[in-house]
Length: 318
Ligand code: XMP
Image 1 (cartoon, protein in one colour):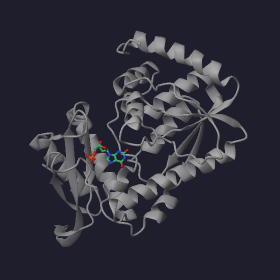
Image 2 (cartoon, rainbow, N blue to C red):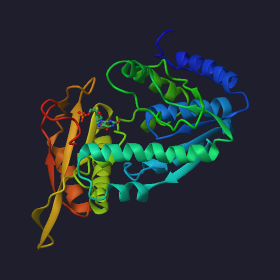
Image 3 (cartoon, helix red, strand yellow):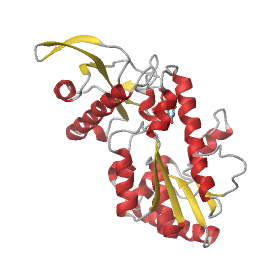
């Protein structure tokens, strides 16, 4: 198959997949876990085009999304594309399970397991009605799962749930998925989204997560993203975010002692995430970000800039 590099090739691919999906599913219903990431969003848009309301999207908000992210999924898919979308706000369930859990791998496991559990619960409610499960599997996922790493998409559903699989983008690479997403009319911020880990802000709110520190992290991260958009950095930096450690330092605000957490800026470039270099953020941008975060975010009293490449640091702090 020719690589999809242009809108014409993307449109031909879309027409072909629309026909194949219609043939595969007939008048049956299809279930999709819609995270709002590039792959699941493109699958959703493609299937809405093919089968409309026969697609049932489930968006689980685990409470660890970035600011505005779940709202954006609802706005694009429910309001603009008129999708059949079930929104599950599971914030309390996830955060309650994570209280006092500080080990990063345990946090990951809890978040991953809870997600599968919740999605299976929704799937079971719909099981009589739904025959297929759509997945945003892409070609590198298939290659990886044949090698050393197990592939965790929404796989892992309990065995009593038997669905046929619909995987319309499984032969595409990430750049091709983005071209198809653009041809389907998805907004740029969704199609060009930087990678975001499955456990979300959970691995950036370092140590045991508390709601107040998670809130501060989310607000600080939103400011960083806003300033990266304004300065043009967003279009070429591979991944950028804030991490907030579980420690406080002494500061002063309004003439009074003010103890707060530091917000740590991380901005890296890489091709494969195995190694990464640091983006040299202009000093004026750093200054603006620092001024805004310390003035606007409750609980933050310092801003730090992480200069560590990978190796020796990993991209995430946990
Ligand atoms: P590290 O921190 O290992 O990150 O240098 C490499 C890339 O992987 C992302 N990452 C994850 N993605 N689940 C994910 O889906 C995870 O648990 C996870 N941990 C790290 C990270 O954001 C970076 O892009």
